[in-house]
Length: 187
Image 1 (tube, rainbow, N blue to C red):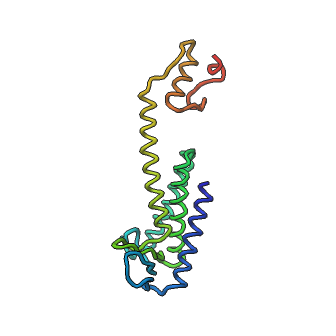
Image 2: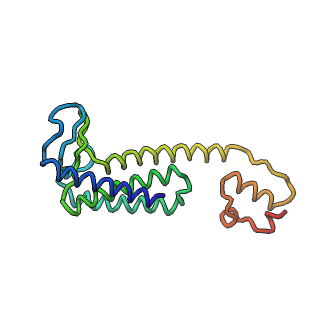
Image 3: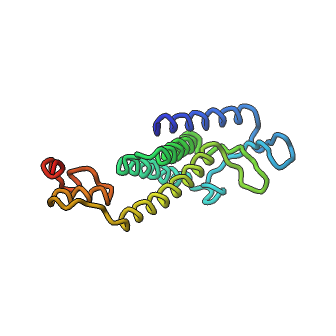
């Protein structure tokens, strides 16, 4: 799901930007006034138009972010649907804006909502993905904390049983991590 979502976000981002570039001149808005408009803008900075004119540094940071996202995916195994969703959204968004920076030297933005800085599909995906990831890790931390504070129920028939109980208590049912042999599990 991570890769499919990342590709969908990337394609949606790039196709909407292509439509905007073909449809509106740079700086032009449709409609001309109002709370919600589509405005063709070029952003050489980051979110909220910070750090304007630092495209090379921001491209490097985007590459680093993609690497970190892939590392998080590899190290967590992304067993959770929410985590895969968060990582896929962020990865697709980061790749979409990185592609703009490498091809054009700026990011095309077009969603113009009230007082907010103008943004695009990639920015939206990154923001939603970040919120989901923060929520996941905070809620997952609470689950781990609850598991550690909950005493394990064990039947004291041997050392192996205690090891199994500890593995279940700490969520490490993988025998190699819990150091539980096949013989211990059977006892």
